[in-house]
Image (cartoon, rainbow, N blue to C red; front, side, top):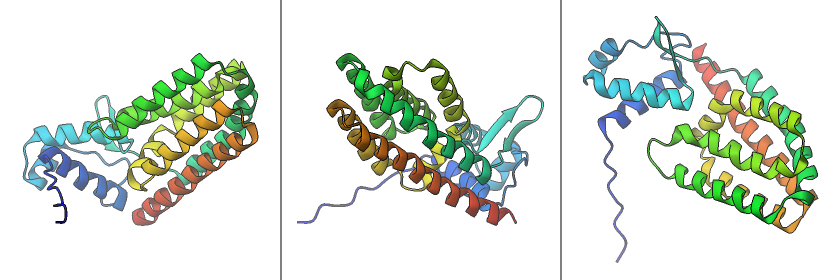
Length: 226
């Protein structure tokens, strides 16, 4: 007897999120365009509560920003900015990892795994999108601690902060979560085994694959805006 496919019941807020996300990514809502809650509520035939909740979630995804005296607006996505950020990460982070692996203690590796468990849990929880990038950054940073390069770590932190929304979109909209999970687990195991060359190669490919996904996503968005 075949197993029945479970019925997924979406909340009104989830449905509004999907509609607004598609409007932003398709270009129906332009970058910088104000998102008036009352107008959206009337257009979508819902109350302002799910509109407000949806805008907060889209802010976590990096598609909406709130500004004083202006309210919510659609953010601008830049393929050039995304490419530069990920290329810089691919230059700096593998070098940090190579310097770090020989010095990583068992406690540091266990701490990195604890963060990874939190990240894997967040991938499966509703309304946890705002945690993805932070936990992803914490996991990678935990593997670089052995390098003892505080200035480089500050640069990496800045790069991750600026690429935050692109990471979320890449994971959410390009089916990147299963691959990210597998590669994170493999990366941690290679670090435990002290396999520097294999680990740095995997990390470089991991970052550049994310870059390619983001570039495609943003370019499609830009084309839709034209």
